[in-house]
Image (tube, rainbow, N blue to C red; front, side, top):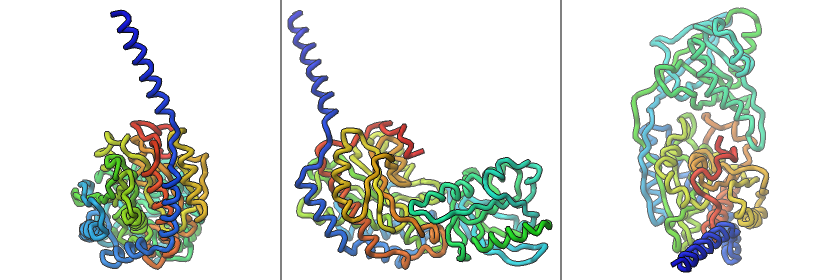
Length: 480
């Protein structure tokens, strides 16, 4: 009996040792898959599927603000389009969120120099009283100045905060602009402001096209009227404020919350041949703001993912793992589709091989970063070598966040890439009326499709995984 127990103990130790060894085994991509991905990359560079997709979406549906009739048309259009593309599975998952509506918006300086101003209401803004709101304006150079202000100087007034974004390839100034829009409105409300205005979070100083975007309000009872001035109009208001005379402004916003809406994430799959329950996740968000047609934000992202998956589907043999395309609902007003998806699939996170979303326009991808287990870095380097010839550099020093909506799955533990596009002029058009199809270069879009197709196929064919597990990447900072 004692001898038998010793044998069982030895067997258990050997099993544990084998398991530990298997866990430490490097993830690699077979040479056959590398060769096939290289051919796929080259084929994608000459393919027009992605451009045709976004052209048809923006023409046949147009702007798709969350909760609107066009949003519902966009969901139906995408379901039909995915089916027409021949994906193995096409389905939807429900997403509920607050319904916010824009009806009309006007502003004018009443004194000392009467004149109209061009602006747009921000998401989750409250409406003004019927007939509008007139109050004195108090201006601040930036968000920090507002934070330090005496609430007594703000109470009952229209707060204006300036923010100056510069063009950058990686768009890093948007962190400042976005914070001024989302946090500034909430801070002003807590100080007792009557309304909130900001200089648009954009980079084209010559265009009178204000940039919308969401505020940090989530409770209608806490919201105040909030809007963004076009950059030339913000300049004009700043010059008037510098005259040193009291400035009175009338704001008339017919906007606000209107209950709850049930939308949907739209999902399509190329079913894996060997491991159908293991998933490479790619996507974009289907909703857009209502000022333009949602071409670069984010019709392009959905188009890139769908076109990449179709190219993989059209290969002679299905990939080993499932390629899943997700067209997320209502990213613009708070990542509602991404958060709903992550909550619904959190228990399956270990089955997610690798993922990322495209949501930064349609400029060429120039950088790849990754959050994967150490044993998978070699596989990432193999992917990097395939996409390097089309202009993508691998930066091993930075984490990969998965993109806006899929950042929520990354936060649950999904291994993720970031595929950074050239966003030098992205914030000229972002969230404004100039977000239209003519801003997309078909060749640049095809390069995006090539990158997504190559990486997704190689991840699907890898021998081993990339480290997805509950809480696996909670300290990498990519999803903060």
